Amino acid sequence: MKSLLRTDLKLPVYSLSEQAVTIEFGREIDRNLLELITVFDKFLIQNPFPGFVTSVPAYTTLSVFFDPARVIQSDELPGRDCFEKVSGYLSQLYKKRESATFAPGSTVAIPVCYDPELGPDIVEVAKIHNISVDTLIRLHSDAEYIVHMIGFMPGFAYLGGMNDLLTTPRKSIPRNAVPAGAVGIAGRQTGIYPLQTPGGWQIIGQTPVKLFDVNRAQPSLLKAGDRVIFRPVSRLEFNQLTGEE
Amino acid sequence: MKIRILKPGLLSTIQDMGRRHFLSQGVPLSGAMDSLSARIANKAVGNDDDQAVIEFTYADAAFKAETDLLIAYAGDGMRLQAGAQILPPERPVFVPAGNVIQLIHNSGGVHTYLAVAGGWDIPVILGSRSTCLTASFGGFKGRALQAEDILSSNGQPGDMSAGIFGRLKNDHVNFAKWSINRQRLLPPNRKLIRIIPGREAGWFNDQSIADFLSAPYQLSRNSNRMGFHLAGPEIIRIKKVELISTAVTPGTIQVTGNGRMILLMADCQTTGGYPRIAQVALVDLPLCGQLKPGDTIYFKEISRREAERLDLQAEADLSRLTTALKSIFL
Figure 1: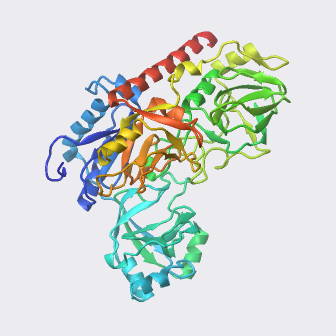
Figure 2: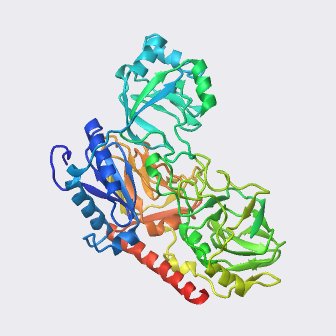
Figure 3: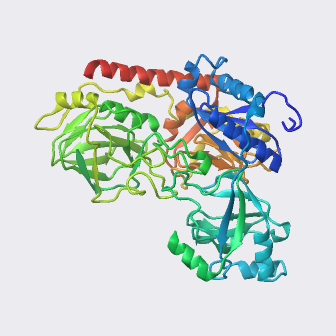
């Protein structure tokens, strides 16, 4: 199967469950693919079919959840069963995607304090790469990251765009509790823990910002397609911002 | 209507049909592990299926009726008693204020669902009353129930509930002679779980697929609302590429790096990166919700279309049931 970026054949859709199908847009992690998925997701949400429930974008896929009893009753969707009705609708919608208006994702600046008290592994990680802590902070905060998807736990963003020089293996012994807001590195990934949880990432800093808050209309601070910048802040500023949150 | 929890039992949480609209933000679906029993308990007191219920895990729990109650329960693993009097399941039961109800262990199964006329008064958070244990929100204060917690019903029960209440109200425990026959809504073989091949089913060798569809698999100890670890013949991969994380859903069976299977359940993560050997047919997921560590199950393959037909059939049966109840009590 080739990427749809290059061909325009029938949309590759598979059944995830009786209540969901997954569109497979490609086979490799890629920023253009992310843009295509983000645009199509928005387009679908603006143009839902009868029985549409929700959609879940991921690296190379968009999964579409629905209510089978409502889909099967819908005469406007052609097909013998729910899978045919939903995948047929999605294929038709995909052909019309040119009319989708594309609003780029937001750019979110996230303050991060790289103080070793909040980033207990930062000195060790700098040592592993034979660089100074200041260089590590610069490499980590100079990049513009992109949110490929949210998953693993509420509000957890899979970020692309970390400098390869910062690739660091996970800790050999995971911590029993990593605080909410901890900024870490694991392999080629960097990310922020939205909730306190056990974890094996190398923790290099902490943000005072809440990545997940049920009291917000959109509880997850980030969404697929957003761009993220880490803004280094002092311990003093971190404490002030923590008070405001 | 109001109850006071005297003994919470192992894990008692508020659940409904789940939080369906925030999956893209990583929020687990949650909801009743055995959704069929939860719906039956709700229907029996005249509620909509999606009202909040209490999900009890194993028995050894107790609560007190602080006011007159109209309740119903359904599920497996326990029966409810007021003193020596057994309260029958799957039907509305009137309990006068002051009674203590105990949940007594009786047979296989894990979860029992307690519905109250009007539904439990629990705030809707992100579109659901279910407890999100991962992020400590929803349900009753974002946590499992504890001794001395007080739960109330919604002030205005519907006309159906009022109709049932009117017929059963008495000065002693009283219950309907009719019941919703849950057995008739369940498949005959409760240890045979029907599956549809998963997207990555072709990533495993033939022997592994043959084992998967014939050998017994046992639930391991580290099984919970997030998922069940299954012990049995190893599932061996022939395709070694890494799966790029994508959406998963309750009923997805993943194969981990060491060849073990995990059956994802109600509180599972929204995305996963393990190859998926199969998806449990939706109609058999409530059966899985009653499994406990040590239970042995078998898997049987059915087609996607058959699974969809079974699900729509089950939904049609349940909605006929609602229509029948309405014709009696409205």
